[in-house]
Amino acid sequence: TAVDVALAGFLDFTRQFNEDMLPIALIHDAMIVDVALKSKEKFVKIINNGYNFKDLGHFPLNIEIISQRKI
Image 1 (cartoon, rainbow, N blue to C red):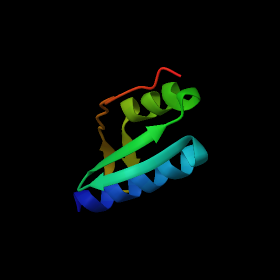
Image 2 (cartoon, one colour; image 1 turned 180 degrees about the horizontal axis):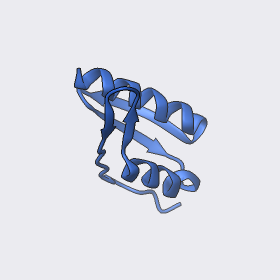
Image 3 (spheres, helix red, strand yellow; image 1 turned 45 degrees about the vertical axis):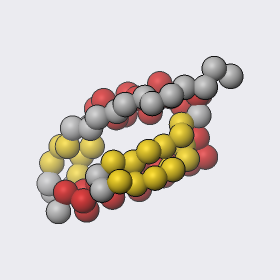
Image 4 (tube, rainbow, N blue to C red; image 1 turned 90 degrees about the vertical axis):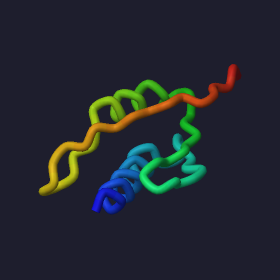
């Protein structure tokens, strides 16, 4: 199902960013995260490229930046 693909993608992103991304909440097929400023550019690039799920193909992703700390 679409939720299975979303959860697999969430796990993949969490592993890629390790301590530079903190998952805050999951809402059905959306994940709210806090990404370290040093990893923001890499994170946005990966999201813009979409997610490839084995045997099911390519899934486009969307990103919304809610807030950004000025630190």
